[in-house]
Image (cartoon, rainbow, N blue to C red; front, side, top):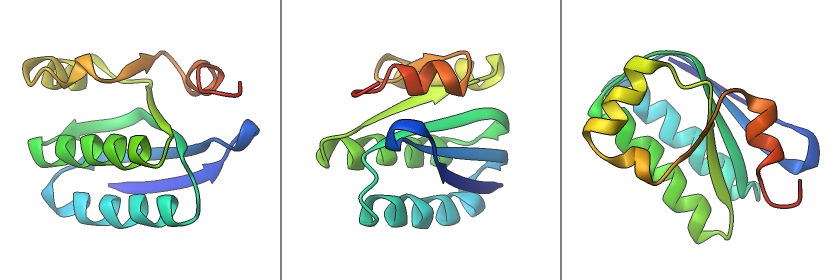
Length: 114
């Protein structure tokens, strides 16, 4: 998996997850999350539209991102989550903590200050 991030309008960081978020890829993802928080990013959108696989460990990394941003006074929104990924989130009940939007624009608009 590759995780790319870029600032969006309104100072929101958009993280694009491509491929699979499994145990191996989760380490890179975690490092990128730490970098975003250290750089002062508190509001983020995770674009999952190109995410094909999510392991339980990868899901844990997304929850970690959510927690770190919340502790910093920010928020995380998910965008473009495909049905198989939503099923994994539903089975583990973490779908209850995330706001999920059909696309990045809708998620960015829902963040504070939008």
